[in-house]
Structure formats: structure tokens, C-alpha cells
Image (cartoon, rainbow, N blue to C red; front, side):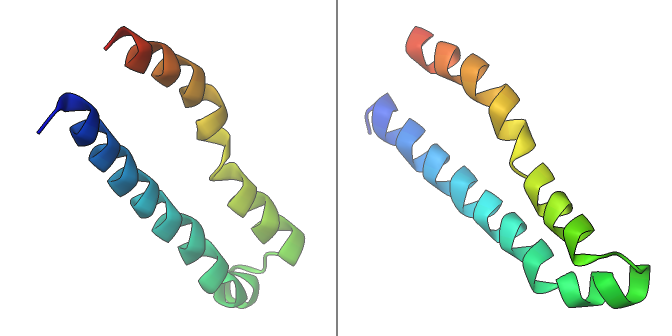
Length: 68
């Protein structure tokens, strides 16, 4: 299997895993509100923090994949 297809498969699996992580906070948000006393605004901020690493990782990852 060529390297580009392996890379595509790895990216697909990573994005799939991140999707599950992203959805898990939304699905337990009612429990976060009642048990931890968080507001829905704070839960929304928590969900937004899941996307934050993508901002910092995307540029070095792009440079790395270009080098490969």
C-alpha cells in the first residue's frame, strides 16, 4: 500500500476518534450542568476547547506532511 494511502487512513481514524471525543462532552452536558454546577455557557466553552489544539497543531502538521 502506498504511503499516501496509509497517511489517509491514519488521518481518517484520528478524525473519527476526535469526533467521538467531541460528541462525548455534548452528550453528557446535562450531567455536567447538574452534578458539577456548570452553566451551559461553560459547557459550550469546554466543547470549544476541544477545537483549540487543532489551531496550534495544524501548521506544524502541514509542514511535516509536506516534507514527507
